[in-house]
Length: 232
Image (cartoon, rainbow, N blue to C red; front, side, top):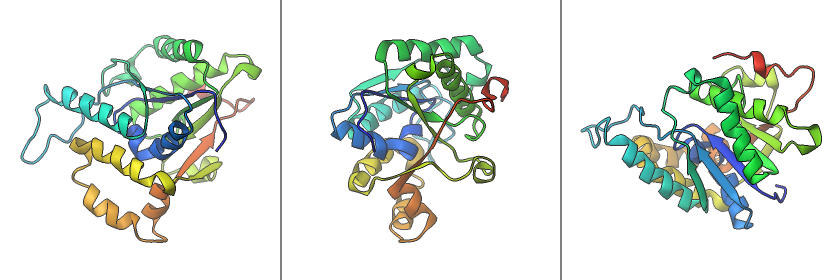
């Protein structure tokens, strides 16, 4: 993993960072690299309200905000930005507004690396809208001014269409921090954590690889770059 000047992480929901990239973030923060996490919503439309219910639709945003703050602290993020957009509506936001939001962050922070979802391969409409906004904002920069773009992809057709991940980070030495970040989002993860931990411990299992290593696809800009045409 390269030493970065500043890492900007942009995801739409609390817990997106925990599952996909919390180990990578923890490595950067251990190196004293500044990390900014721009979380676009509070995940207030999350389906898990508990059984029996521990939250209402009205109380869930405050719960998820506190969980996000706890998760950020677990992996050393000191600059957490809650951008205030509404969960499950990002696909309907104005494209220029979304792009400007990302552009403003880039202009302020001058990151050498941005971590986000890969457009077209991240399944959820909010994920896709976020990915498109990031790629559009980076594309308009001069080629030598663009930060690196490392993307998370998990659609069923990922391997067939864009191939295996370009980057595979071994994050076993910060695995405990990754689990702490996941446990912080307890409203959404309580139903799965016990079984998950036992499955992850099984050498050779798919979950062992997914949670002990983190995978990224590098986004490159060339004549095949068609993200401006991608619609949700």
